[in-house]
Length: 340
Image 1 (tube, one colour):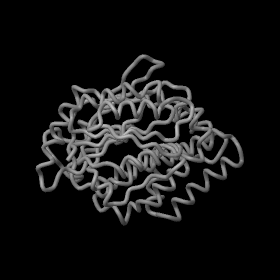
Image 2: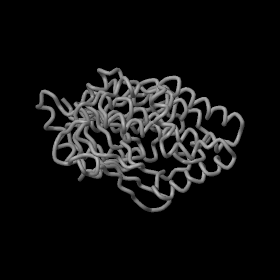
Image 3: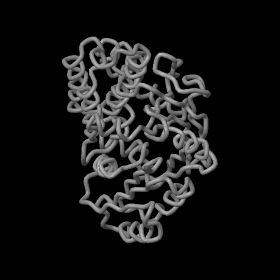
């Protein structure tokens, strides 16, 4: 059995995919690298991928498919994954080989266990090209660093601290047994990846190493503010999927996990509200009211918790002044917490 299956979704990624692949190869011969060419048309992504496969036929697989978006590429990688663990690495990101030594060591030991750890968590780094700075996102305040734990043993996340795709490595069979599937032709599905499997996770191991380099700097990147504004419909689609997939009252009995997931959903609802208000149109305001109605109808108790959450109180004040306060607060938080 391979220890880890790495899925690399690629769409016109020829200019930067080599660095990503090289960083994964340094993890050892017991990894599986699945390069998913998601219908690239503007460059030689497919050709490069197959060249890598020819060089490392026992490690690298290539999937050429019609364009279906990031979620579709992750789905394709998961379907082919044979490793004990599954991790997604975007083609413009990379892993730190020295940090991965510790992750790989722990993951290899799980192969011999009857019940391997469900979720391995490690740190990720924002590589901010425009600022020439790096920002490490770690979890020492949340997880012990010396043992496998359950959700009951976790600490409290800070207001700006979340488990993102970059920090997570799920047990592959857990993902397959729960029939995990991401929406196609949609951005921001990494939020679903970092949210909906969590109620199925029983055991967690945190490794305090800075493993994942998350590159931020391209103007066309999905997290660029102008791009997010133009794709608010997809943010809404992802948020509805999260609401539909997990009922926090019925599906999450663990108290601390429920609190964390409520905070995550509150953050998603805040983003929807902010960007719909940024649109500055009657249609945007109607959509903002509709997404809140959607949550209220699906899960009234969670709706009350999320609506009263501190990050959503100011954002949703129903006046022009409230709108200015909400947008201003968002931009202030950007500067304070340095996200995106």
